[in-house]
Length: 305
Image (cartoon, rainbow, N blue to C red; front, side, top):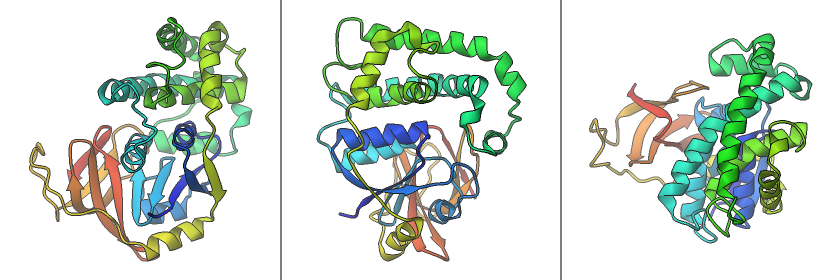
C-alpha cells in the first residue's frame, strides 16, 4: 500500500484534526508542509485548483476536505475505529461542531491576537472567503463571537457531565476530533484561561486527553518528492455509476467540483465514480500526469463543465 502523505501546515485547525486522527489510528505518514497563504503551486498540481488545507495523498489519489480524508482513513485502516459508538450520530455531530465553532474561534483570535498570523494572511483569506476581512469589524464583533462560542462550548461540556472521557463514551472518535480542533486553536494561541474556555474546565480536561493521543509517526517529505510519488503511481479509482444520483450523472462526463462556502476555486475533470458521500474526477497535469481527485458530496457543488 502506498504511503500516506499529508499536505498541511502547523497552525491549520483542520490539519490538526487529521493529524490527531492519524495518531488515534497509530499510523506512519509523510508530512509535506504547505505555505500558509497562496500561491501553492505544488498543491495546485495535485488538486487542479482546490486550495484548502489539508489534502491527503495516497499514490495518485488525492483526497480533499478533512471530512472525506477521515472517511478514507477509516476505510483503509478500520481499527481502531473513528466510530466507537456508531457512524451516523458521529458524522452529524462532527458536521455541527465544525460548522458552528470553527469560524467564531478564528474570529476571536483575529480580534484578540492578530499578530500571531503570518504577514499577508488577512489579504489571502479575503480572497479565499470572497469578502472583505476588516480588522476593525472583527474587533467590534468580538462580544458576539464570544457569546456564540460559549453557547456551543456549553453543549459540548454538557455531553461530558456524566463523567465520560469522550463525547460519545469511553473511547475517542471522529466527533471528538471534529469538536476538538477549534478548542486546540484557541488553546494554542490564547491559552486555556482565555474566554470562553476559562468557564469550561471539564472541556479543557477533555482537550488535554485528546492532545495526549499525539500524531502517530510522521516523517518529513518534500513537495517535489510528493509530486514524484503521484507521477509514478496509478489511481485505485474505478468507473462506478451511482444509480441513485439525483441528476443521473455518469462516468465519462466532464464536471466541475467547487466548495460551497469558501475557497470557491472549481476543479474540472472527468467523472470517474460517485456515491452518496463521494465524487471522484480524473484530471491530467503536465508535471505529474494523471491523478484522481476525491471530494465529499456534502459541502460541494457538482456542475456540468
